[in-house]
View 1 (tube, rainbow, N blue to C red):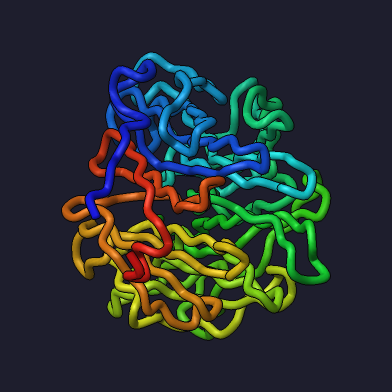
View 2: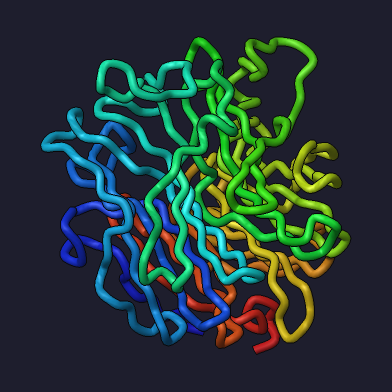
Length: 376
C-alpha cells in the first residue's frame, strides 16, 4: 500500500523557515488540531524565538486551514528572543475543552542554563529559568485563553529546567479518577546539566495541578532527586490508560539497552512502579508517541517512533491488543529519516501521524488498523 503524505508545516506557510515538535488531537466535533514550534532564527531549541502555531482540518487531514499563532514570543535575534517550546495538547472530551502545555523561557535561556528557581519577576525582568505554561480553548481551537504559569503549583525550586514530554496528554476514563487530566513532563535538577527525570502533572478540575513522584527511584548516586549517571536519564514520555484504569508510560531514556522504558501507575499517576524495557520497542534515544484508542469498539495501543538503535530512522507504528504487554503488529510508515511525531485516531476511523521527516518541516500521514495488522 502506497502511503500518501501531506505537508502541514513548512517554510512558506507561516512567518519562519523552521517548524518542529508536532502535537495533534481530534475533537468530538470532528476537528483535527495540529500544533508545533515555529522556530525563527534556526531549527535549534531555545534560546531562539519560538512561537506556538496551529493548523486545523475539518476533513480528517485531507486539507488544512491557514496557520494561526496561538502564543507569540518576542525578539530580534536568536539570543535576544524568548521562546514557547515543545507543545503537548490534551483533549478533555468530557467537558469538550482543549489544553495546550508548553515551556516558556526568557531571552538567552534554554535547558542547559535555566536557573534553579520557581521563577517570577525581579527588577522588572523574568528570573532566567524555565516556566511551564498552560492555555486552553473551549471552541475547538478557534480562540485560546491567555497562558498561565503552573510553576508555583508543580515546580520544585531545586529544578532548573521544566518542560512537557511533547505529544499529547490524556483525560482519564476507566477508574475512580475519571475526568483527571494528565500531562507528561520532565525536569532537570542536577548541578551538571542536563541530568533529567520524567514524571507527570495532573488535575481534577483543570485549574489546580499537582506533580507525581519520579517515574523511577534510585537507591544510590542521587543528587537532588535525579540520578547522575547519563544512561539513567528519563526524559520525554507519553501516557496511556489501560482497561483496568492503570496508567502506562512509554519513556525516552539513555540506557544502553536502546529500548523504550515502560512504567505503571495504579494510583492515578501519583507513583510509578514495574519499570521495564520492552524488547520489541527499539529506540535510538528519541521522542516517542503513544495512543490508546478504540477501533470498532476494540481497544488498541499504538506506539510510533524511529525503530533503530542508533539513528532516527525508519518511522514505525506498532499495535498492541493486550493493553501494551506485547506489540505483535508493526509497519514502517516512513523509511529513512524520522524524528519527532504525534499520533491521533481520526473520525474516519484511521490513524493519523504528524511527524518530522527532517529538522525543519512537519508532514501528515494516515494509515488503517487493518493495514498494520496485515488484513488488507
